[in-house]
Length: 445
Image (tube, rainbow, N blue to C red; front, side, top):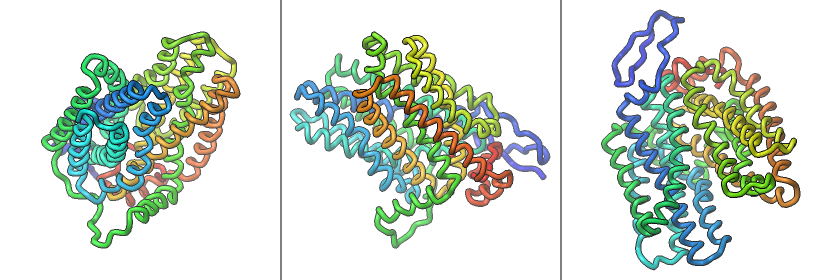
């Protein structure tokens, strides 16, 4: 019995008889999709703009007040609203057409950032505007992630997710560096104007580059309150054993990114300064950016799922080596290896997205993002406090050990909830169109 696969431009391609291996998707296939290119460029603009505004406002507050605490509070304001937006607003991308949600989010953010450009704007007003802007980001990101699965079916979705992940890392770095450079050369106000323009361009790319689709969820005239819908979303995600395990595997990022939170004191403990701190931070990102496209392109879907658990264990366990107090060079190798093993997130993300029904996908992704942001923030604060008492190397080793044990337990649990026959059950829940044909689902991001 033949099955049909859709090419990157919508052409029908007949696969061979049942059991034949479909052609391997390539990054060229992904980038050949016009809608994905528009989504990709809009993501670059949005992330870089977010980082630019956050850096510019942090520097503005510090220069005007001279208070490190207020500057840190502004920087934290760029993260805390994710909790509100992720829990209560992300589901808008299920109940409303996702393209419309993304355009509306970009339009509102462009206007709010433009208001920041007004001279003599009080700092409290700037912080409040930043809070609202960041709160609007989760529904945009949830809509973007959900619509990616609509644009890229099958194995192409996995490669598309890898492109987006690599882009996210690169755009964050470029946005942060660009923010400092922009403030130095054109000032804070003009930097904010540039940020507003990035949202306008992003919205235009989405409006003219992505076709309209109807809302994923059926309209309900009697909508319950937002907190009730949020509670239902949490019960849905945590009530499914496979979704819960995949979610917790994703949240392990809080443990293996602890070196970022204590990079400065760790470098100082090794006799290094700002350059050493920068090298530590770079080592926690660079390897992931390199390995992500390689992992998705050259490791087959079934192997990715099989490697997901062991890689999650290794990405945390590798950090235990810092207990031996290695020098800077060896430390950079340890952090790079840990970051490289972190490519398991691609497999977890793909399995999560495939298992969640389309009409609940944006809300589920919003909940996942909230856990990542809150978990990392809490882990960084706890690591910083612990580094006041014990050495930064010990802090990293302890966090790595806890993460490794947790990953090991989750890996064992995953094998129990992913029986060989789970593939068909998952397809019945998500629909054949949503399930990538070449991704083996074993009871299941």
